[in-house]
Amino acid sequence: MRVIYVAGLCLLLLIASIEDLRHQRVNPYWLLLHAGFAIAARSILGELLPGLAGVTIGLLLLAAAFVSRQKVGYGDGLVFVVCGLYLGFWENFSLLFMSLVLCALGGLALMLIGKIKKGQTLPFVPFVMAAFVCAVVFEALG
Image (tube, rainbow, N blue to C red; front, top):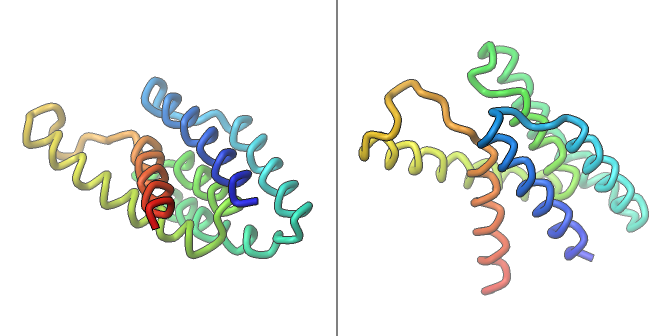
């Protein structure tokens, strides 16, 4: 059944990454559709509580967006709300950590080659997608 969660989340992150790169935003209707799918899948499988616990990571990011006056985007928080529904708390926390590490390394590399300057924003969802792909590959390799 894990395949359902991986496929759904991969599709979500792929489309959201493209939107974030092109428009610097993520379509909330797309997120709502995936939230409904994740809740339905978890309900059918009788695993709703872990998904609801996973939402807390996204809620914390939404709070950070509010407090920081959107230095962290609301879209990033909403993406992690939906990721939490698919993954649960600890896997969502790991995804956030890996995404932050990849974003920091990517930002540093882009600064070193002169593509961005200090203080410039980066789309975050593509780093979430990269972290998710890495996690799936590492899990598959054992």
